[in-house]
Structure formats: structure tokens, C-alpha cells
Length: 282
Ligand code: SAM
Image (cartoon, rainbow, N blue to C red; front, top):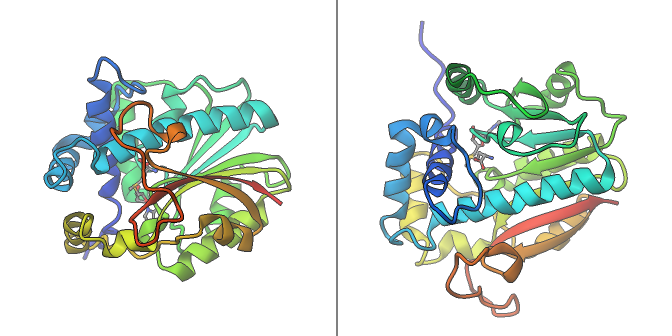
């Protein structure tokens, strides 16, 4: 029987794991992810090398993944602590190991949602490592571009009546504008006032910038083309019922001493930018 084709964005999860594995080797690491090297495998390290070759590693996409990981580690823990939310939903969780790495408040249920091929690979590695999570962990195999993922989430024990913290990390860039809007609408339907959401976004200039061209082209050749960006993340999120704050990758709050220069101020036009967004449901 013919096997269904893998979603071309699925292997990007291994690239992210490779970046976290490399960070784990550093003495001044921003986090430790001991499972990351096995999760990444040769394929993940191959992606990392190819994507970074034009940047020499210093501020390239691997460092983006590392700073983003730490930024949203802090966001998730702070949001749970402040709001008392006991449900955390990671949409497009990929090979994320926060269930194992972070010290969650007691009672937290963490839902990892991704494609079956990604979660299958992840579970095989985690089982072999005999790792134990620091929270109640639930895996939800689902396609976020379909309408039925909220049912799959509820089928795994998620309670829409209880407050949650949401994260959409490393996904929206690959989706069409329409898919992004549909996804945010579904998250909005499941969220109550005050619930928190974290996500990352590129701006439009990133798609067409000569600085990012080599990476964009390499992704497109692998079938994982960049499709969505916005220059006004706060307005885009407001359209979907969220009050958002955006910082740029490299800003004082999203740097951790890893980037030599601050990003260009927002009013300067035509600059490629990447944003870490945190939001509260209106
Ligand atoms: N959030 C993880 C991280 O930061 O390491 C993974 C990010 S990775 C760049 C993108 C993830 O999006 C992959 O794990 C991929 O499988 C997932 N993804 C892409 N399209 C998806 C879809 N339609 N439904 C569910 N997951 C999807």
C-alpha cells in the first residue's frame, strides 16, 4: 500500500531539536535538554548545518530557536503561576521536551499537539530514554489545518471550561494567511477572558529580504516554504480577540546576552524582523 506523504514541515521539528541539543552542550546554556540530541538525530543536525551555513551560527536560525525556547519557557511558567491555569496546550509541539525539562506547578496537565509522524518518532525516543515528565502529559495526534483538532484535544482530556495557557511556536510562518486566521479563531473559541497565548511570527520583509534569502530558498526546496508574515502583530492579534505585546528577537527582553546588536527600531521600514508575541484573551 502507498504510504501517505509526510508533511514537509514535520522534519523542521528535528532541526529545532538539534539547535537545543547544541545549546545543551554550552557551559552558559540557557536551558538543558538532554533528550534533544537523540530526538534530532542525523537528520536534525544536517538541517541545522545547512540552514546556518550562510550565517556562521552566531545569530542565525539555530540561535533564534534557542532564544525563542528560553523566552517561551519563561512565559509558560510565569503564565501558569500568575493565572493558576492548570492546562497548557502546545500547538505544533514538535520535539519539544518542556514536559520533562521544566518544573511545573503541581496539577498541570500539558497537551502536546502535532502530526502523528512527529509524535510517533518522539515517543519512541522518549520511551527508550525512560524519561518521566514533571506534569501530567497528554499527546494529541492531529492536523492543525483540519477542523477536528479541538475534538481530538478534548478527546485527550482537555476541558474547555478550565483556564489554559496556549503556545504556537514555530508554526505560523509555514501556514497560509487563511490557515493562520482559522487556527487563531479556533484557539479563540476555546479560550476564556484573560487566558494567555504565546506565539512567534516573522514580518513580511523577512520573506523577501536578501539577508534571509538563502534560508528561505533552502526551506522552499524542502517543501517547507515560508508563507505568512505580518508587520503589525499587535493589530493582527487584536483582530482575533487578543491583546498582544510583541518583542523582537534580540530586544533586551529576548536576547540573554546572545546577540551582539539590538534589532532595528520598529519605525524603520523595510527591515526583516521576527517577533515573540504574548497575549491575553479579551
Ligand atoms: N514548536 C516546536 C519547536 O519549537 O521545537 C516545533 C516547531 S517546528 C519548526 C514546526 C512544527 O509544526 C513541526 O513539528 C510540524 O510537524 C508542525 N506542524 C506543521 N504543520 C502542522 C499541522 N498541519 N498540524 C500539526 N502540526 C503541524
